[in-house]
Length: 417
Ligand SMILES: Cc1cc2nc3c(=O)[nH]c(=O)nc-3n(C[C@H](O)[C@H](O)[C@H](O)COP(=O)(O)OP(=O)(O)OC[C@H]3O[C@@H](n4cnc5c(N)ncnc54)[C@H](O)[C@@H]3O)c2cc1C
Image (cartoon, rainbow, N blue to C red; front, side):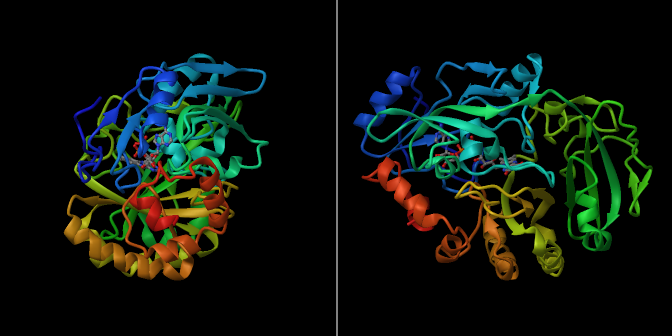
């Protein structure tokens, strides 16, 4: 049991008074079956109250941590509470890789999957799209397995903890690969608007960071090394310059905390995330928000945000723009459409940030933007619900898995209903 009751950023104290850490799946099954109201907690990196409950919380971080590769099926089955960073190192050792990672390797697999956590790349689905199977404890304490050919599967992967406690996840793997990462300074914001598609198509994974105030951005370009490819980064790119040293995406934070850049080839897991596993990611003293906008509207949305630069910039550490490929997962922020993610790492000033979020949300409303489930937003719950066409199907699924709403919480009441 844990006495610590705050999330990673410290902006949220969980209402739950008990946080259990069972050491075996059987112990977890008994706990779930006998506890009235209970929810799974991951590595606590969400800023929203998505994980919280007025009942009890349970972490699966204490379960045995297998990383079992099935080379013939090209999958790996991992304990749900493992951090991506731990899974990745073991996978790489065995010659395998995941298709993509988020900006930090510190988050748990189950928690990331449950909220549709994503990295970047026009051709890369979010991290939940790699899920080929889920092993979860339902409200009645039964351990069930769901695979891709199951009719409920697309509803069960990004499930916000509403269907049960996931104990293991089977993920697709690909042969291990290397990535070369370079950063470009002083990419004009005008050019980001004018050449948006070209910028994000430039490499396997591209992120654009801006403070909205300087009129420029930094481009984080992650090139997947293919045998015999002759890729060499141009010293100049669309008006930007190749950085003359290592950078941290967050201004003022040490470059040593960020993964290696300057075109040095390295393993996928040590280049696709921006932050190194052994250091605190991002800033720490922060809040985060993100809105996933259909790619067709990305440039208009960018323009709408640029018009709010004077409101956004004083409260901001940094903003990041990424792209994510469409998927079929009902509650995924990229369900049914390619999206561009407009992310904000805010200073830890909730009173200042709240009203600006409302302005951003008004500006993005015409583009049907879906807020990131794990970050902060103030969008009207009715509008959020309208943006998920399979919500009614998800409600039916929830009714079947958890008829008494024991995995429910205030967040699900608001946004799922
Ligand atoms: C510094 C930082 C950087 C980030 N970078 C990115 C990024 O690059 N891309 C991005 O998309 N997001 C990013 N995020 C957001 C983060 O990935 C999500 O909030 C994610 O859900 C956090 O995972 P977690 O393990 O901490 O889950 P928690 O926050 O603990 O829980 C999130 C949800 O997952 C559910 N859950 C957790 N474990 C289980 C389980 N075993 N079974 C069932 N449900 C479970 C919980 O019930 C809850 O609903 C970042 C957050 C931080 C703090």
